[in-house]
Length: 80
Image 1 (tube, rainbow, N blue to C red):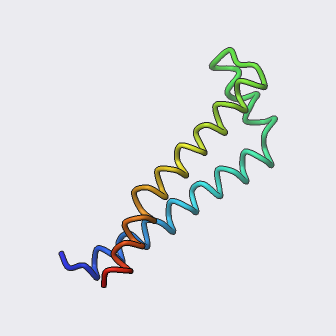
Image 2 (tube, helix red, strand yellow):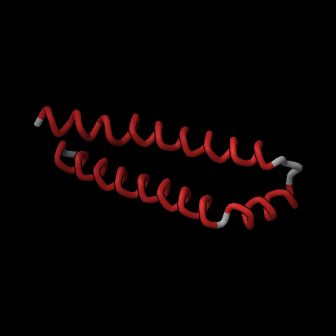
């Protein structure tokens, strides 16, 4: 695997992961009540707990994307 190929893979992985987090945020924002009703059928959750779980999940996903995709991509871009 060449450095150029690895850089392209990390670049596309970053685009895909940031698209996923953007879609998650948009769906969560626009369909908050419907999502809450769906999840409250399965789990006993308050609105505050439901929001905190989603925001923590989004934060974890975003930090992981930056840590494992963006940072290595930028490092390879700077080195080569």
